Length: 127
Image (cartoon, rainbow, N blue to C red; front, side, top):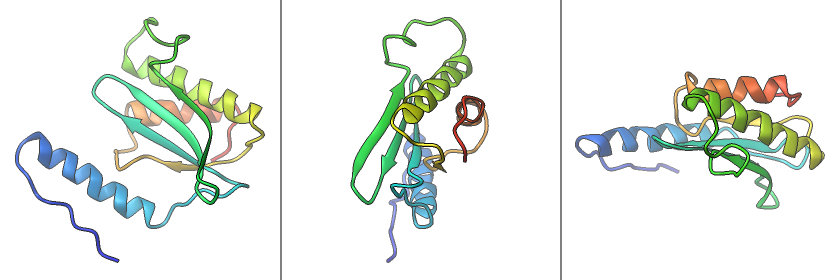
């Protein structure tokens, strides 16, 4: 099935490119009960990470820069992304998840996305 994303101008063009890449990635990636999907959503200010079982349609664990333990914390946005990665890995392990499939959400695997993934790996989550 073909998906179309309308071409726009300015910042909307970047958002359309991210949406197009995310659709391309999601054609191949799906979360199962044995290996759920770790989804990363990035905005200019915040990061959200969720561990999702796509078959059941349930979120097993989540973490965000809006959480009380991270919000207002010290450091730049990359440092906060590392905290989100460690927190989502801790919560996923508590939910019984050992391995995940990483969904970068159409974003480039660099900067805050890579920092979150590295922190989740260091906390013991397998990709």
